[in-house]
Image (tube, helix red, strand yellow):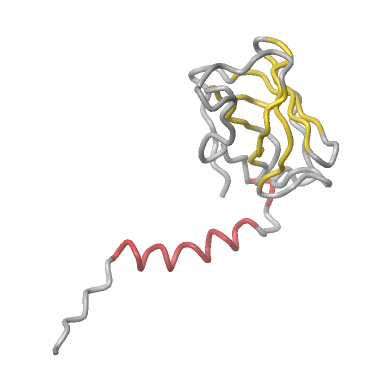
Length: 139
């Protein structure tokens, strides 16, 4: 039985070409031009039934830290670290933080203030991002 070869699709070739370049860029010495990436998707759902998070309750959370501890998705909102914990180059999380994620808990300490506690003991406070905030991409 003769089987026709399916043509290689352009998106597959492009992905195979650009993926190694993107991975190399993450280890680049040129960190002064890099900015943080917002978490690619919500990293935690406070409850199984979709109820909002409660103040004072800790929820399991995986914080996206690749290119720095800057942003979080929690309780259906986008958050900005305040202040931003940084490393010297600014393109990675500070020493002791996981990369690309750090697991721990997120807690609403007030209506508009959240606290992430990593399993390793690191902490970061977050405030809700303004709706018109322009999230930057990490290269």
